[in-house]
Length: 275
Image (cartoon, rainbow, N blue to C red; front, side, top):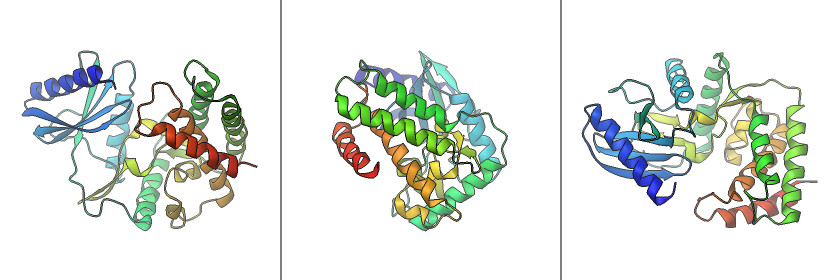
Protein backbone atom coordinates (compact mmCIF):
# COMPACT_ATOMS: atom_id res chain seq x y z
CA UNK A 1 0.00 0.00 0.00
CA UNK A 2 1.16 3.55 -0.57
CA UNK A 3 1.74 5.78 2.43
CA UNK A 4 -1.68 7.43 2.50
CA UNK A 5 -3.57 4.16 2.02
CA UNK A 6 -1.47 2.42 4.66
CA UNK A 7 -2.18 5.22 7.11
CA UNK A 8 -5.92 4.95 6.51
CA UNK A 9 -5.76 1.15 6.79
CA UNK A 10 -3.96 1.41 10.12
CA UNK A 11 -6.53 3.86 11.43
CA UNK A 12 -9.33 1.51 10.35
CA UNK A 13 -7.73 -1.43 12.19
CA UNK A 14 -7.22 0.56 15.38
CA UNK A 15 -10.81 1.80 15.21
CA UNK A 16 -12.22 -1.71 14.74
CA UNK A 17 -10.25 -3.21 17.60
CA UNK A 18 -11.06 -0.37 19.97
CA UNK A 19 -14.76 -0.73 19.14
CA UNK A 20 -14.54 -4.39 20.19
CA UNK A 21 -13.33 -3.45 23.66
CA UNK A 22 -9.67 -4.28 23.19
CA UNK A 23 -7.06 -1.62 24.03
CA UNK A 24 -5.36 -0.55 20.80
CA UNK A 25 -3.22 2.58 20.75
CA UNK A 26 -0.18 1.60 18.71
CA UNK A 27 0.41 -0.35 15.50
CA UNK A 28 3.61 -2.06 14.35
CA UNK A 29 3.78 -2.84 10.64
CA UNK A 30 4.84 -6.47 10.13
CA UNK A 31 4.20 -6.72 6.38
CA UNK A 32 3.05 -4.30 3.71
CA UNK A 33 1.99 -5.72 0.35
CA UNK A 34 -1.49 -6.15 -1.10
CA UNK A 35 -2.53 -6.46 2.56
CA UNK A 36 -1.24 -4.56 5.55
CA UNK A 37 -0.33 -6.80 8.49
CA UNK A 38 -0.17 -5.04 11.86
CA UNK A 39 0.61 -5.97 15.44
CA UNK A 40 -1.75 -3.86 17.54
CA UNK A 41 -0.73 -2.94 21.07
CA UNK A 42 -1.23 -3.19 24.00
CA UNK A 43 -3.96 -5.78 23.25
CA UNK A 44 -1.39 -7.73 21.22
CA UNK A 45 -3.56 -8.89 18.35
CA UNK A 46 -2.58 -9.30 14.72
CA UNK A 47 -4.69 -7.42 12.20
CA UNK A 48 -4.73 -8.04 8.47
CA UNK A 49 -6.19 -5.15 6.51
CA UNK A 50 -7.17 -5.02 2.83
CA UNK A 51 -9.28 -2.76 0.65
CA UNK A 52 -12.89 -3.93 0.49
CA UNK A 53 -12.56 -4.50 -3.24
CA UNK A 54 -9.40 -6.65 -2.91
CA UNK A 55 -9.98 -9.36 -0.32
CA UNK A 56 -11.38 -12.83 0.33
CA UNK A 57 -11.58 -12.47 4.10
CA UNK A 58 -14.70 -14.56 4.70
CA UNK A 59 -13.24 -17.50 2.74
CA UNK A 60 -9.94 -17.27 4.62
CA UNK A 61 -11.61 -17.11 8.04
CA UNK A 62 -13.89 -20.07 7.41
CA UNK A 63 -11.03 -22.14 6.04
CA UNK A 64 -8.80 -21.26 9.01
CA UNK A 65 -11.54 -22.30 11.44
CA UNK A 66 -12.10 -25.63 9.73
CA UNK A 67 -8.40 -26.42 9.40
CA UNK A 68 -7.71 -25.52 13.03
CA UNK A 69 -10.63 -27.73 14.04
CA UNK A 70 -9.03 -30.59 12.13
CA UNK A 71 -5.76 -30.13 14.01
CA UNK A 72 -3.86 -28.54 11.13
CA UNK A 73 -0.86 -26.28 11.88
CA UNK A 74 -2.45 -22.96 10.92
CA UNK A 75 -2.55 -19.62 12.73
CA UNK A 76 -5.55 -19.19 15.00
CA UNK A 77 -8.03 -16.36 14.85
CA UNK A 78 -8.11 -14.06 17.88
CA UNK A 79 -10.37 -15.92 20.37
CA UNK A 80 -11.40 -12.70 22.12
CA UNK A 81 -13.57 -11.45 19.25
CA UNK A 82 -16.17 -12.85 16.88
CA UNK A 83 -14.37 -14.62 13.99
CA UNK A 84 -15.60 -12.57 11.05
CA UNK A 85 -14.46 -9.78 8.72
CA UNK A 86 -14.92 -6.23 10.03
CA UNK A 87 -15.49 -3.44 7.51
CA UNK A 88 -14.43 0.11 8.29
CA UNK A 89 -13.81 3.12 6.04
CA UNK A 90 -13.34 1.11 2.84
CA UNK A 91 -11.19 -1.60 4.42
CA UNK A 92 -11.80 -5.13 5.66
CA UNK A 93 -10.03 -6.10 8.90
CA UNK A 94 -9.51 -9.65 10.17
CA UNK A 95 -8.06 -10.36 13.61
CA UNK A 96 -5.67 -13.21 14.41
CA UNK A 97 -3.57 -14.50 17.26
CA UNK A 98 -0.17 -12.86 17.46
CA UNK A 99 2.58 -15.44 17.95
CA UNK A 100 5.85 -14.47 19.57
CA UNK A 101 8.57 -15.73 17.22
CA UNK A 102 10.56 -18.69 18.49
CA UNK A 103 14.31 -19.02 18.14
CA UNK A 104 15.64 -19.89 15.67
CA UNK A 105 13.17 -18.16 13.35
CA UNK A 106 14.08 -20.40 10.40
CA UNK A 107 12.13 -23.66 10.41
CA UNK A 108 14.36 -26.74 9.86
CA UNK A 109 13.52 -28.62 6.62
CA UNK A 110 12.30 -31.75 8.38
CA UNK A 111 9.89 -29.77 10.61
CA UNK A 112 8.77 -27.69 7.64
CA UNK A 113 7.99 -30.85 5.64
CA UNK A 114 6.22 -32.51 8.57
CA UNK A 115 4.01 -29.44 9.11
CA UNK A 116 3.21 -29.20 5.40
CA UNK A 117 2.33 -32.90 5.34
CA UNK A 118 -0.06 -32.38 8.27
CA UNK A 119 -1.61 -29.40 6.52
CA UNK A 120 -2.12 -31.34 3.28
CA UNK A 121 -3.59 -34.30 5.17
CA UNK A 122 -6.14 -32.04 6.82
CA UNK A 123 -6.91 -30.27 3.56
CA UNK A 124 -7.67 -33.54 1.80
CA UNK A 125 -10.52 -34.12 4.25
CA UNK A 126 -12.21 -30.78 3.48
CA UNK A 127 -14.82 -30.24 0.80
CA UNK A 128 -14.09 -26.60 -0.05
CA UNK A 129 -14.73 -24.72 -3.27
CA UNK A 130 -11.43 -23.15 -4.28
CA UNK A 131 -9.80 -21.92 -7.51
CA UNK A 132 -7.61 -24.28 -9.51
CA UNK A 133 -3.89 -23.53 -9.62
CA UNK A 134 -4.29 -22.83 -13.34
CA UNK A 135 -6.41 -19.80 -12.44
CA UNK A 136 -3.38 -18.33 -10.71
CA UNK A 137 -1.20 -19.18 -13.70
CA UNK A 138 -3.72 -17.38 -15.91
CA UNK A 139 -3.46 -14.28 -13.70
CA UNK A 140 0.30 -14.21 -14.29
CA UNK A 141 -0.24 -14.73 -18.02
CA UNK A 142 -2.61 -11.77 -18.20
CA UNK A 143 -0.11 -9.61 -16.34
CA UNK A 144 2.71 -10.55 -18.73
CA UNK A 145 0.48 -9.86 -21.75
CA UNK A 146 -0.54 -6.43 -20.43
CA UNK A 147 2.14 -3.96 -21.55
CA UNK A 148 0.50 -1.17 -19.54
CA UNK A 149 0.82 -3.17 -16.29
CA UNK A 150 4.37 -4.36 -17.06
CA UNK A 151 5.88 -1.48 -19.08
CA UNK A 152 9.51 -2.20 -18.10
CA UNK A 153 9.49 -5.84 -19.18
CA UNK A 154 11.67 -6.27 -22.28
CA UNK A 155 10.12 -7.99 -25.29
CA UNK A 156 12.44 -11.00 -25.14
CA UNK A 157 11.78 -11.47 -21.43
CA UNK A 158 8.04 -11.06 -21.98
CA UNK A 159 8.14 -13.83 -24.58
CA UNK A 160 10.20 -16.07 -22.28
CA UNK A 161 7.75 -15.66 -19.39
CA UNK A 162 4.68 -16.11 -21.62
CA UNK A 163 6.10 -19.29 -23.17
CA UNK A 164 7.16 -20.71 -19.79
CA UNK A 165 3.79 -20.04 -18.17
CA UNK A 166 1.92 -21.56 -21.11
CA UNK A 167 3.99 -24.70 -21.63
CA UNK A 168 4.67 -25.59 -17.99
CA UNK A 169 1.17 -24.64 -16.90
CA UNK A 170 -0.17 -27.13 -19.44
CA UNK A 171 2.41 -29.79 -18.49
CA UNK A 172 1.52 -29.61 -14.78
CA UNK A 173 -2.21 -29.50 -15.53
CA UNK A 174 -1.94 -32.65 -17.63
CA UNK A 175 0.29 -34.62 -15.24
CA UNK A 176 -2.52 -37.08 -14.49
CA UNK A 177 -1.83 -37.48 -10.77
CA UNK A 178 -3.93 -36.71 -7.70
CA UNK A 179 -5.00 -33.15 -6.92
CA UNK A 180 -6.32 -31.66 -3.70
CA UNK A 181 -6.79 -28.45 -1.74
CA UNK A 182 -3.47 -26.62 -1.32
CA UNK A 183 -2.15 -23.67 0.66
CA UNK A 184 -1.12 -22.03 -2.61
CA UNK A 185 1.96 -20.17 -1.33
CA UNK A 186 3.58 -22.02 1.59
CA UNK A 187 6.89 -20.18 1.16
CA UNK A 188 9.02 -19.33 4.22
CA UNK A 189 7.34 -15.93 4.56
CA UNK A 190 4.06 -17.73 5.27
CA UNK A 191 5.55 -20.19 7.78
CA UNK A 192 5.99 -19.13 11.43
CA UNK A 193 8.24 -20.76 14.00
CA UNK A 194 6.36 -20.23 17.26
CA UNK A 195 6.46 -21.51 20.82
CA UNK A 196 3.41 -23.58 19.85
CA UNK A 197 5.12 -25.16 16.84
CA UNK A 198 5.07 -24.38 13.13
CA UNK A 199 2.09 -22.35 11.92
CA UNK A 200 1.06 -21.55 8.32
CA UNK A 201 -0.51 -18.15 7.65
CA UNK A 202 -2.11 -16.34 4.70
CA UNK A 203 -4.69 -18.85 3.49
CA UNK A 204 -6.22 -16.51 0.90
CA UNK A 205 -4.07 -18.14 -1.80
CA UNK A 206 -5.62 -21.61 -1.34
CA UNK A 207 -6.24 -23.44 -4.59
CA UNK A 208 -6.54 -26.98 -5.94
CA UNK A 209 -3.73 -28.85 -7.63
CA UNK A 210 -0.95 -31.39 -7.03
CA UNK A 211 0.98 -31.18 -3.74
CA UNK A 212 4.12 -30.58 -5.80
CA UNK A 213 2.75 -27.10 -6.62
CA UNK A 214 2.87 -26.27 -2.90
CA UNK A 215 6.27 -27.91 -2.45
CA UNK A 216 7.65 -25.75 -5.26
CA UNK A 217 7.22 -22.69 -3.00
CA UNK A 218 9.27 -24.23 -0.18
CA UNK A 219 13.08 -24.41 0.02
CA UNK A 220 14.61 -27.27 -1.98
CA UNK A 221 15.64 -29.16 1.17
CA UNK A 222 12.01 -29.48 2.32
CA UNK A 223 11.03 -31.80 -0.56
CA UNK A 224 13.65 -34.34 0.55
CA UNK A 225 11.64 -34.84 3.76
CA UNK A 226 8.21 -34.91 2.09
CA UNK A 227 7.19 -38.48 1.32
CA UNK A 228 5.83 -39.42 -2.08
CA UNK A 229 6.66 -36.28 -4.06
CA UNK A 230 7.00 -36.75 -7.83
CA UNK A 231 10.44 -35.30 -8.54
CA UNK A 232 9.87 -34.68 -12.26
CA UNK A 233 6.57 -32.93 -11.57
CA UNK A 234 8.17 -30.93 -8.76
CA UNK A 235 10.88 -29.69 -11.12
CA UNK A 236 8.24 -28.45 -13.55
CA UNK A 237 6.31 -26.81 -10.74
CA UNK A 238 9.43 -25.05 -9.45
CA UNK A 239 10.08 -23.39 -12.80
CA UNK A 240 6.38 -22.60 -13.24
CA UNK A 241 6.18 -20.95 -9.82
CA UNK A 242 9.40 -19.06 -10.53
CA UNK A 243 7.85 -17.68 -13.72
CA UNK A 244 4.72 -16.66 -11.80
CA UNK A 245 6.52 -14.76 -9.06
CA UNK A 246 8.82 -13.17 -11.64
CA UNK A 247 5.73 -11.83 -13.41
CA UNK A 248 4.46 -10.30 -10.13
CA UNK A 249 7.74 -8.45 -9.68
CA UNK A 250 7.37 -6.72 -13.07
CA UNK A 251 3.96 -5.32 -12.17
CA UNK A 252 4.22 -1.53 -12.19
CA UNK A 253 2.42 -1.48 -8.80
CA UNK A 254 4.71 -4.02 -7.11
CA UNK A 255 6.42 -2.56 -4.06
CA UNK A 256 8.53 -5.43 -2.83
CA UNK A 257 11.91 -3.95 -1.80
CA UNK A 258 14.51 -5.04 -4.33
CA UNK A 259 11.80 -6.68 -6.43
CA UNK A 260 13.20 -5.70 -9.82
CA UNK A 261 16.66 -7.03 -8.96
CA UNK A 262 15.06 -10.32 -7.93
CA UNK A 263 13.04 -10.37 -11.16
CA UNK A 264 16.19 -9.99 -13.26
CA UNK A 265 17.92 -12.77 -11.30
CA UNK A 266 14.92 -15.07 -11.65
CA UNK A 267 14.69 -14.46 -15.40
CA UNK A 268 18.23 -15.76 -15.76
CA UNK A 269 17.33 -18.85 -13.74
CA UNK A 270 14.32 -19.48 -15.97
CA UNK A 271 16.53 -19.23 -19.07
CA UNK A 272 18.85 -21.81 -17.53
CA UNK A 273 16.14 -24.16 -16.27
CA UNK A 274 13.86 -24.09 -19.31
CA UNK A 275 14.84 -26.34 -22.26
